[in-house]
Each structure stands twice: as C-alpha cells, then as structure tokens.
Amino acid sequence: MIGSFRLQVGPLRLYSCSEQELLNEISEYTITKRGFVITYAHLHTLALAKEDGAVAKSINSCDICYCDGIGVSYTSILTNGHWLSKVTANNFIDKLTDVARIHRWRVAIIGGRPETVSAARRYFSQRGALIVYSQSGYFNESQDDIIRQDLVEIEPDLIFIGMGQDRQEKLALSLKILLPRTVLFCVGGLFSFIAGEEWPCPVWVRKLGLEWTIRLASSPHRLWRRYLLEGPRLLLGAMVWRRL
Image 1 (cartoon, helix red, strand yellow):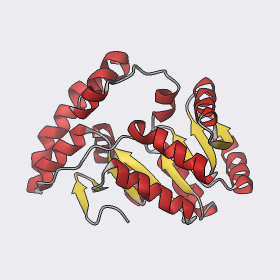
Image 2: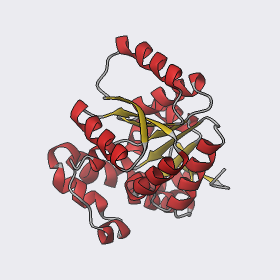
Image 3: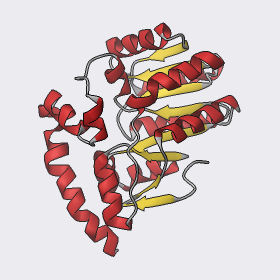
Image 4: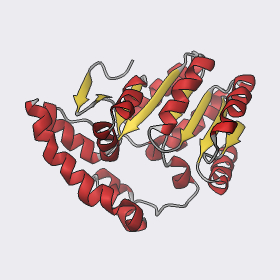
C-alpha cells in the first residue's frame, strides 16, 4: 500500500503519496479486484472532522485518505513537521480514464445534479471508458436500497462517488461490504470540474497551491466562509494540535 507511513493531521490519518503513486494504487487494486475505499482531505474536511467525531470516523475508516489541499500540507507541517504533497483528482482524471479504457473497466458514477452527472458520463464515454451505471447524488433514503441492489447486480470494477463529505464516504463504506471486489473512489466535486461547471484553473496556479483562489472567485457566496474564516482558524489551531 502507498504511504509507507501515515501521518496524523488533527483528527485524521493521512497517507503521504504523489499523484502518480495514487494512480498506480487505484490501478493495482482495480486490476486485482480487491475492494478499496479512497477519499481525500482538504481544510474543510479537517474542520468537519474536528467538529464531528462521526465524520472523522468515516474518513479514517477509508483505506486511503490523501491530502487534497495546500492548507492540509501546511497544517501537517505545523502539527508533525512533515510536508504532505497535494494530490488532486482533477489533475490525473484523464490518465485514470485512459487506464480504465485500456483495461475495459466497468465504471459507475454517482453524484452531482442530474445534468452534471450526465455531462460527466459523456466525458468518460467520449474518452472510451465503459460506463455501466450513473446516478445523480440527489436521492433520498427510499432509493438507497434500489441503488445498492442495482450496483450489486452490475458489480462495477470502479465506482466514482462525488457527493459531500461524509455522505460519500458512508455510501462507499457500505458498498464495500456488498462489493468486495470493487474500488470505490470518493471524488467530491470532480464531476462539476469535468462537466465544465467550474472555472478552469491554470496549471501554474495549481503548482503554486493557489487553486483555492480560483474556486473562491467562482463561488464566493458558497466558499468565502470556508477559505477566509475556516481555513485560517484551522491553521492557528494546528499549533494546539501539535502540543497535544
């Protein structure tokens, strides 16, 4: 497994890996048909986990949780003295889709608004991926059993779940029990990105760790509290975690 060492960052245990290492891990577990749950953590994840122990438990129950935000990288430095490389699914989804096409993986996608998941399905299909199931993320509890039953009958090789944390992790963990040969990848807002609903972020901005500025500018009403209040508060609290 990647991340020969796992770091405690606040309430979460995160793996240290590069984007290529994570891509290799997803490929290996999908090819060998070993059930696996992968998720991510950014500053908002840390805030949710800090406020709610049930969220921390869901995230920590996943097989891999990687760093998906430069704020988490800095928090890791402050809490344990180790830098965690930022890994973002947006950066390697094209490569992962190409691998899925080559190996003819049967892929399912769950999450987003109906029009978003439809656009995401087109993206994957146009790149040659075999999409065997798609479902928007706006379903109620009465549909849970139907969705689970459909997925068990189809048994995809790889399932992308793009919903809010920790709803997506809870779904992935429950599906892992029913689909022990399926890799479940929690991807948050990935479908909105590939559907073209978010502003494109220049590569140089990503390399500088400033992708959050683009997201904030594109959705200020939704994200201002997360980036301008929540983030700084967590970084200040990181020194407290280190002393603890």
